[in-house]
Length: 454
Ligand code: UDP
Image 1: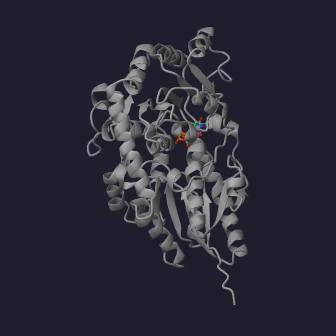
Image 2: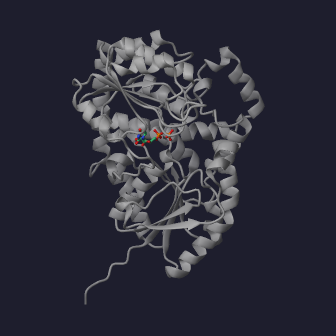
Image 3: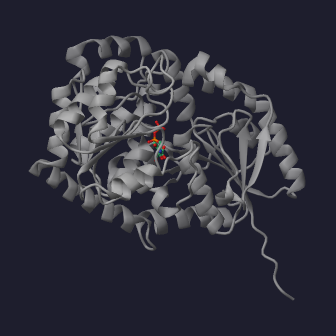
């Protein structure tokens, strides 16, 4: 008789934001390829589409969620706090139903660390659960450290320029000002959310989208402090590519790139959430234009306050970008970074963008906006030495110099060599026998395949 292999089910709980959706869907693909069924639980505030890439996945939506205007009014951190309050009950119901339908076989609930409401259902139904961190291991360490500081005295330290420039004890080379405080909410509410995200409760393991060749000491720190297995299985975009762009990609920029010289273009993108002041946009346009290098610039609709897109920028802006620049609302970023014409990436240093840039051997201009981006920028400049960080006020002279340093000067060529070296190490870590693949993903999968082992 033919053996019928039943796939055990893994439930994924993503945060409805691009930087979180992308890696969790990649993780889903990796786990599906290892023989699991995948159910993705979405909130009604839903930005994940069940596209053709995920036709094998099962999608469920839990009711009673928040809207876009709640996000605008509350800001991302209070929005997350509310989302966690609202979703706890409906997620329990959803898991109860799923267990009835699945004959009680859920191998594991893998939840984004910011969707900590998942733990109530996991506890009630005594299910194995795993916390999935979409930030770097170092940012996780920083959040753990921040979760235990006194908000009031930390704020005083941060506001003292002498202290904020100093290295934070135990976190070299991060300075006080590099720690992941956020422009998205008051320090107290940010620290409150951080303490929820680093509290692993009954989770039996932590998965991180990183690898030991990038962050071995932070990973060791987590392994020691969390006292559960920590699986660095990244970079997931190399291990399991799964296109999950929530916005429409403008592919015309690839045709434009095809016409540019090898390694000459600076690609600029600040991810899915960062905002830009009009005066900074103008300084950037001047500096980019003066650098004489071609540039591809993603300007997301709504990313310049009080402007739908770029229509309310002064005439000067169009004049400055018209000669050497190309502007799109959203780009196929992976393809852009892979393009031979691209010589550098001006980034806000979100963790996905950071991994994607290193994964293509592209050095960076780092202009972090908030949160963990500051941690990543410091590491890019000081630890991996493949980035130039722009600090303080932006002015056209600094922009021009940074572009020339990265694309034209010998210093940029050295950074590119180091970036290519790191790219090779990343690729090796996800190959069969590499640290992210053999010692992490396989170990994790094996632990799940043994029923009741977690
Ligand atoms: N991205 C994209 N097209 C763009 C800009 C960004 O596809 O024009 C993708 C990018 O490849 C990355 C994600 O959006 O995977 C942004 O995630 P990241 O963690 O870098 O930043 P966040 O948006 O969370 O601030």
